[in-house]
Image (cartoon, rainbow, N blue to C red; front, side, top):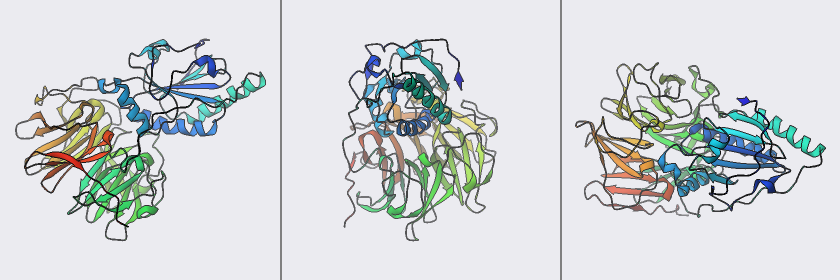
Length: 481
């Protein structure tokens, strides 16, 4: 919500801030334009959703509005400016961003939560503070008022916004986030390119789903529109896709001419906790992980901090765990709490869930749908510690994968740049020791005597031979023409 503020001018920014994607900018040179500062963290799903709103405001007020992102870290991983650059490139941010690693601006402006938007008028006077996302209409009206006022007073500037630089280098893959194995194929979410690839185990692309342009439409193969697809699962010759940016679950009929349709979600983010109902008419919020079993899809709803079930026979969607509160609590399904649950896998004794912002591994029972924590103690208790589950620590784990042959859960411990293994029998965590640089790994799957890893920030797919222990890059090649 917006809060009333005393008269306050932000004359200048501290001179020792770390500008991530451009040269330092003086606020004095931005006078005559409205300035929007927004405070975010790369780990926050709400901040990612706010970014979509910010882009719409930038497009509407491309003359007259300055947008500056202020990244304030929660996790130690986020303090590194190189990691912040990866985040803003993954989110397609094209305005100046500051890495406020020491929280200077946060404290100066008395910010209390992620995300927060601060509006300054054409003279640098504080005009409003807005907590959370979902304020697009309110912000649009206020920016319009401030620009009209500046015009009437003869102080409005039509200078273009500052230039930014440091984009990602072009590569065939762009921030691949998840991978799943079929009988003799892999499916890889090429998230930065808004598409999903079908690959042979040797890396040859055999089919592409998604046009490459961000959008939301059904069709066949490359005639389909996705927006930041992430989690994947397979069931009965069907590939299910968490279309995260469209807040929907999509389906590819692999044996039916690559037909893609939408099975859950409206394409618009849920603004409140959704009631159960028809899957296609029920709003979702940033689904990121999915698991198929017995004609049902179990989905991690990162934006609603819940686990949902989509019934493919009845075409319904409903919550099965998570109160919807951003928190950390075990117990019954209705009373349990998650914080950005990201990945889900099915083992013999139930579902295992990577609860990213709690840096936790959680378990959801198949019998009574109760939730218990295996590793982790809450939002600000993170680290990099192996050993007994009770004392082990993770940092923003993104994906999990059950390995039935070894009775273990593979974990993409993303902000530690590691792959870890949870032994169900021993109830302990160990780090996979590899002679290879992992850079915020996400998706994991088991196939062909190998563990496949989406090494997201390095734009690559890796293969770990589970017999020899050799880990190497898969040469993902374009389809033959």
